Amino acid sequence: MCQHQTPCPSADSADRESARLVAHHPEQGWSLLCNGVLLFEDTGELLPDGRIIAPHRPPAGSQVVTAA
Image 1 (spheres, rainbow, N blue to C red):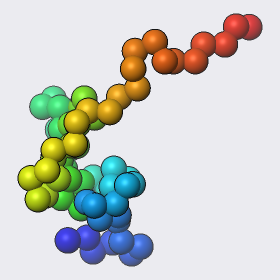
Image 2: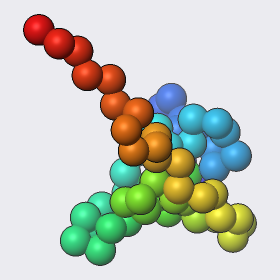
Image 3: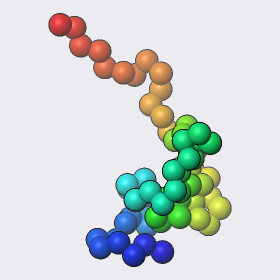
């Protein structure tokens, strides 16, 4: 699929989300990556072979806050 030099990570790679954007529709909450992965606003993914990756946002309250 990918024609970039250096090629984007495949849909099966752990770093698949770092592939380049092909289409971006923030108003609809999804983006299509060069490797065929549909990446959703909630961090869920649909892989080209139909597998679903559940959303993987960090849990609420896990943000680090530092005091001045």
